[in-house]
Image (cartoon, rainbow, N blue to C red; front, side, top):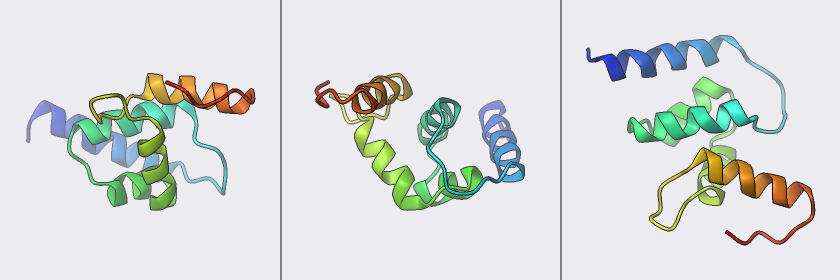
Length: 91
């Protein structure tokens, strides 16, 4: 097992222990989604470890894609702030 795989497994275990009811995605969860997607983890597994509905994770990934189609937590956070402030969702 490589270092990267060990880190992914540690993240999965950490979030599997901290389960919460329906809520908004936090910035740290956005960062985790970015890391896990970068490591090749599928949406269903990300949703399980973060205790979020898979469709919520999928929508988050769609909202946070950059021009190249890669998920960026920084971009997603920036867009989320604009949405929350009532501004248009332009990149």
